Amino acid sequence: MEFRRESQRLIVTVGRADAVAGAVAFVGVAAGLAAFFVVRGFGAPDAQTTSTTDAWAAAPVFTIATDGHPARGPADAPVTIVEFTDYECPFCGQHARQVLPTLLASWGDTLRYVVRNFPNLVLHPRALPAAEAAECAHGHDRFWEYRALLHELPLDLSGERLTSVAVASGIDTTRFRSCVETRATRDVVALDLLAAWEAGVFGTPTFFVNGRRFGGERTLDQLNEFIRLALTDAAR
Image (cartoon, rainbow, N blue to C red; front, side):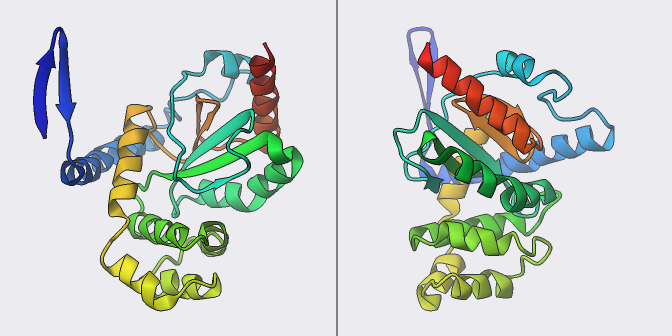
């Protein structure tokens, strides 16, 4: 890690190895804080009690990189949703099974949907290996097939099942095992964690709709309304 000063700014250059170590250290703290809030009933950082319109107006806005990450829909779609997910999170699994298919079918080429990682190392010990395995599947162009099968049994994320899901997804087993065993995608997951940290993600799922952040589980009706509001903003 290198530090330098330019005028009144401190510039920090982070190498890839530093990014991995820093992200892993951070996520432990973030996950612990998330657990603290949940246990004490304080709720998610982004309130869900206001109307959808008010929530949209109040949502903080961030620039979230999407290039190279698993995505459905055209790159030039007027609305982009980025989901930060955890494969042991029951709400993430419910969203993937019950909400996302309808959302994609309803909006077609209007919507681009991108998935990035935020595994909780404190509450979900198998989430990090699952995220790395899913990114290995992405490298074989089988991410969406792999993710769908993984979410069918979210409580079983053993090493054996990560491989069996790869086989069922049509991925070459030898290459997949090599990717998982060498943790070839750990930098991808670590950099996702750093991006989540910078954008104020505290738990999963967290959605960014054209950059506006909405933490916690969201219904199909809420997401549909957020898309409509995004389209209205884009037309102005």
